[in-house]
Length: 323
Image (tube, rainbow, N blue to C red):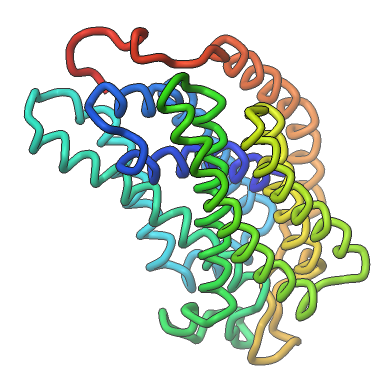
């Protein structure tokens, strides 16, 4: 649930960041685009922090093997997220085109790198990695750069970019809205190709009988998002791209279960929901905490999005530098 929330919410943040140089024509355009996510992007990242913390608390062995084996990839994601956050705050501090250009690159790179590497990481989690009898990762960086995982990276990259384009069409007006809507066609075709290929490969190699259902939902949702976005129904299009991301996450975790990190060396070395978990008492406490606080978090974030629901226009951007 936490990873699903993170990918749905942070996914369009990444898409907006990657589309900045494509859609903006001047500094005001740039500020309009960034202000569409300005009130929510840092709250969306909290889902990642909670997902990482919950993984450590509920499945410490999974956390240990995952974060040691994927250390370099996760470090790159962390550095990219830091660079992007700093860029949002520092870009408007000095009135210099060169200054802003450097921070713009940080926003684009800080969005592109995680969007790509999360797909690579989860592709390797589903596919499995070499683990020894002590559940230590015995591969290297090249082990993670296999065709299946790289296709997973292209899948998340393309889907998040489409998600961001639909979000921008929903949150902007006039020319910016039209540019974003125009992009949904080619981006949708790319997302259907990359994500469709990755999900079909996942289903055929690792899926269960029931996981054909989320695969079908993801495919229909991606196609539907493009059709309704082109018709000017951006709200429905955003709902469709979000549904596609949810279905994709369900398919990945459904194909993985009951493993949490399969071993390609020996199936006996795989980490499962049983041998990688904390004590039953810990899991019981975490469950009750989640039941109590998750609805509160969802209500609060829903309220935040409702408060900032209006479209951002060029006229709404105040004078000065700012974002």
